[in-house]
Length: 212
Image (tube, rainbow, N blue to C red):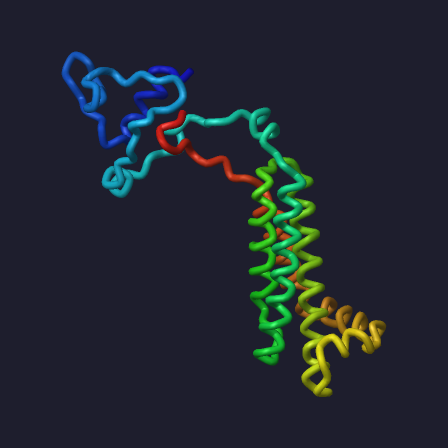
């Protein structure tokens, strides 16, 4: 149950707050001191007050303990979402590279963000979420690079994409991939790894809807 001090700090940010001599901060809707255990159904954020004086983090008590957040973790869901993002990012990389005729440096950065954000849907706080997010970001980058190389060969030799996939010398393809990684591409892969790790963890937001 929220303490009176916590409730008062929170209600300062509600449009229904008022101040009465002798009582202090009250709720305009009830005319009484605000009292609730976890949430106030009538809470409405005062946007003007937020614009003029953004609330400090200490104005909002932490809503969940570490044990509660661990209980909400869903690693399979996070992995599933991240795998989908990994595949989508790789395909997008291949298509954009082939259509533009060049490798675009920001693609690994975008992929790292996308895969990490998808992994975050598992609401994880343990390191395993970041490790898997980073690994899938790297896989997506390598796969995207691979698909773009196949696309270039398909264009140069006027062959079907799947025809190239069926008859290409994969040893040569991996040699090209390795050269790309050893070049400046490695720097962008590093960004993808960093973002894939960083964005994979849940963000503990401030309470919404009046929840303490």
